[in-house]
Image (cartoon, rainbow, N blue to C red; front, side):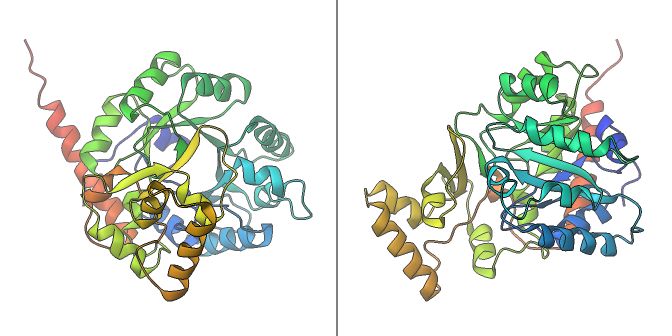
Length: 348
């Protein structure tokens, strides 16, 4: 067990021991994974994805039960909303935002919408009528988006997402270290929202480097795909384990096209394991033919055209283990790396 903890503004804000966030990965994370991460001392998000309000309430109540949180207390997990999906659900007969707020998650995460500010405003209005105040996270990849989220929307935490990230993001995002440095210059520490780094992070040494580079914490997705609690199928997890470091992932909308999950804002796409879905697109096959191959492969249980969202760090992990063990390993590695870094300083 680590003999030290890592103290950052994020750990204070969320009342956690470790500045590690489980990203709200659609089709991969759930109440089980988010609760396991929180229980280990970090903080877990549950993806709202396409789930109904009843399903999201059920997930939050499940997390509440796993974490032994009293019904009248905030449940120490978050819900991650995708903006373009909210644009559809919030004008349907099953709006989800207020239904989720009623369950008092500690945090909400907003990403990938043309006007996320209107939803953040609804959160603030809802919270103005009660004691509990929701922590609002917003994904950004540019200084322009960061300043809007900070100054116009009043976000509490900015998730600085680099091009390395798995799943969806800005197609033209710079590498994470560049995004982080740019945001730190635009919003110096202590002058605005906290900044959390995201994209290609799989090890404790990477976490330590990002903390020293000005991040208050990190958000990890791919590393937590290698867990018992991740709801990826066994073939998907096998594909993760067998992925290498070189050319193992690719950014494209081809996976969304065959998966029928199109709707992303302009200049956004997704990173997943490189396989025959991408080959079909590169070979110039039309969408109808690609859909046919994808559907037939799925029906036959073939693995050549699985959709496996993952970031560039996928090749740094090679086994499936409990989420608690992953958090603990990352904590130990991070503390060790920070100690080694401090040893580089010599008094003159």
